[in-house]
Length: 279
Image (cartoon, rainbow, N blue to C red; front, side, top):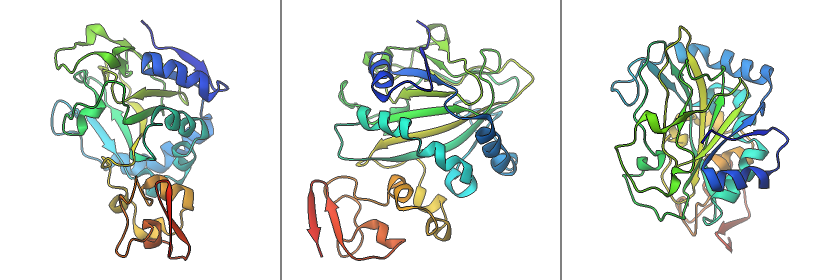
């Protein structure tokens, strides 16, 4: 089975239907070239300063550069892309809220071997979530063209219902080939891995992931984004970063206050899930 491609004009319902069935798909041309080029330019000095991975899984010739909200203002539009947030809301609908899980430019250098096939939700201490309960919605935006030769992400479409196993191999996968500006959307349950880069170029993708509001984030947004930067961000982005109640009363500060008040003190009501507490 190949990875399904949909046009940028596809509806949230169309995208969710394929994602529910296959656990992965590609939305072609969802971001413009100028937008991608701006992110690449803003992140270039940070990528250059990032050390490569320390083990085979993270990639000894691969760098992973985070803190996109602080370092790349141009990335904010992708992080808050209405199509992606709409699909995420439908996929993670059983939770009261979702949040930004991580932002990371993954740069796979030339002559890099393929990554082992895995599930991203294993990051949660290999907890066995129910087979019908999704806790993650993930994206990889192509900052360069993704080809089989340069290490396009490899996936096993439809593998979300398989039991946990470390034995799956690259022979069971297909490459998520896509043009610069396209977006791979996949769940935390689908088996996948970074492809082997057998080219002379570096394959770059922006991994933006969301998870349900009651789980810990992989990238600590509160420490990755300096307070002075956070103070200038809009409320919508701050809440997506986690400055909100994740479920009933999860994440409040001191005297049961809305966590956004740590950045932007105000008066008013705080929502506890479906309950609103007036102060």
